[in-house]
Length: 446
Image (cartoon, rainbow, N blue to C red; front, side, top):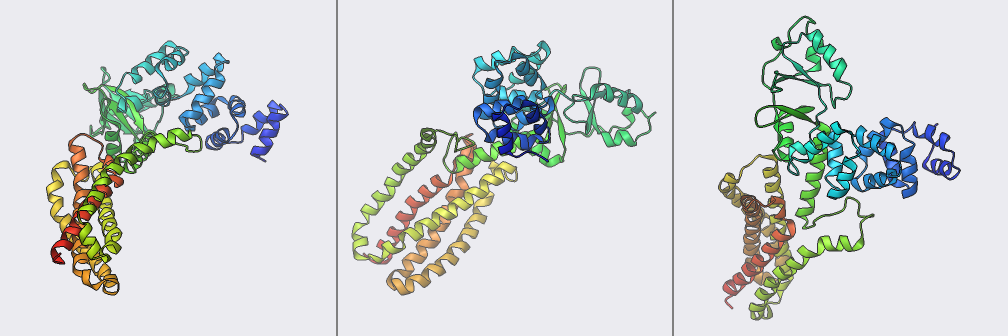
């Protein structure tokens, strides 16, 4: 029977290390990682030290970076165990950990690795930040095209132990240029005496080490692979990227875009562990900027003070109208950002979408105008025409703002997610106030 967290902590308190180590063997990597993360700092180190070598490797990969740092600090006094952990971690996971550390600390840890592992780590860290080269691993199996299938399996048995994956085997020439890839299933089903070169079709998908990580997401999506080879500009096979690495990137990119869309920057993965001031700092900049933007709305209202005094009922519909324009704009921006991110539309497609967006937003505006007309017929029938026309125009203008901002930001080489909901809403609010009261001044013959 597996021990509970309370029972494990009691074993630590009683210093029953053998019993604790036996109990930890019953936890898989994810369960052990959750347990380490949930316990006090001193207990984290104890639990991690009692993990088997294979468990420690898996647990370290799953832990957040902040937790990884705690583990490394805790193991610093035991140089041998720290070196073993850093050596056991897959090169791509090790690189991801090192790149988040200050340079001097990362360098001290790298020096604990063997010369071969140091070379691999420094090579991966030499690629640009957020490039595919940073996330690839050099742990893969490659065979020559002149091998027979039987020779290929002999080679795989000899060199496949440390490979990140054996689902795909890569075929190279004498200069390590990639010729093709082949699944292990194809090799298993082939005749042992067949030559590998007779099994290839040279229709493989690959990644460039210098390309951005988002390119890898797109290629994985289009080719439905568990792993993809990473090549140099000359076509030399440098490493591979596996699907689990891509899932990590997708999570990071989605989180980053989500924060940008809400005008939030540099948010901690765990708000319970972040300092209050940092949470405040990460949100205040955009909020203050948007306050100054919304001053324009106030200035516009001041110019229509006489209209408001004559038709007080106009104020009743103001929040509803400007919110509707902002909401329509946020919807449009969300869709455009997603389409751009998935590559379903290009920057050059903006003019093709305007006509469609105008028609859709007009239909939305008409539908919402009918709803607001029903309310106005009871509340203030004298402003029905103004309110209905303003609703249609606000929804249409908000939608166009939401559509165009992501294209403008992308053209300026700024992340489209920066065209966030608060920014779209603020612009729609300013325009909505001007449209609403300009219509009122004109149509109510003020």
